[in-house]
Image (cartoon, rainbow, N blue to C red):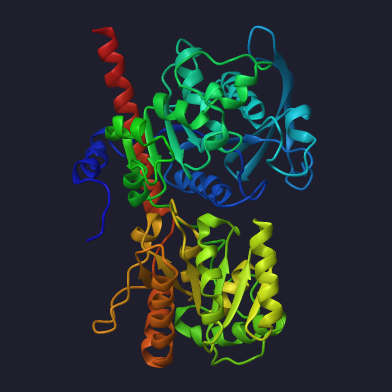
Length: 515
């Protein structure tokens, strides 16, 4: 039985229709990265696509993100500097100057950028500095300063992941009487609970660990690097949500809670899950300009031409009958590459080809390169290439997703759009999006395995390969996955209901304080 949110939680969202879908909200969506301006992964996809979907529903929304001066070209995106030398007071001894830029995510959807040369303009990568906490502490304060300067009286401040986690804290502590911000409710979305502050949470020495409630240390205090942004967001946000219903349940357990499961469980009445969507304009094989040949579920036989193309492109023997298994993700332990390593010699005895695309763990990448030399006609490893990502989905037959944990995952949704059948572990967001195939009834849209075990994964791969041999059956399955809908329209409506839940909770708490 599929596990999701408890029925009463789903009712909480549904019942908020009482606030009327005609009530349009003012929303500030805040994220450390937003596609197409800055991107390291799925966070940017969500932060770029969800606001567009909310705008289509008629809501007044703006987006706020850092201005990475060495990465974002203001001329390319027609960005204009709207305010300069704005002072942001950080503590009694420290302050910083910031500038504000404006552009448009779509024609009528403004996006604002916060510029600070010292912390956001010098680096050629989004992350990885020795003072990540200070960078995003400044960013969070500057976001609130920007909203005040714009006189944007937000109903909702939507905070994406740890980088924005101090906004709910600051809003309650320092801005609760602000005329512009006093009515704003905060929603904190956990995209991946592993990431809680500017470095690994488990490496923080005990003496520097953050209790989440005491005053923040000054910038020159070593304890500043122990401040846990995610913990403070969970303790202060009006509503917390994750990017799948299953993950919302998992993070309240010891196994998946990343040492925050207790405080999450204490606030379980405020923890919700909404599965992500994908932008169907960006991921559409019918008109994707990056494909060798465009196709859709009506003429998906054209997919064979894309298969031959990627085989040639990645120096694999061209044979349309050989199944191609792909992986496109960060090369990290979380993504299950150790399982692949365990049975790599067995996998390559099968009649298949494999394309692995990704960046990350150098040791694992070195191993993949060795495997490529051993099996040059069966395996290609390549660094992640955004331009070729959808071409791989369009040419491959299956995608392997053996994650140890997975908050939601966008890859399975993207790949299915291109007729690439998922082989996924039954965990996190995969539980909500990948349903195990039953050959007797021909139900399901992929192949699942439950145990985090290489043998269990091998069984799932074998089942997929055997199904692939039954051409008519496989054709129906490919058509089915291509016709599935993972657009942002439905998740966006769920977010509107969640935002109204946050407003209701904020109002109820306000009444309790007054009593």
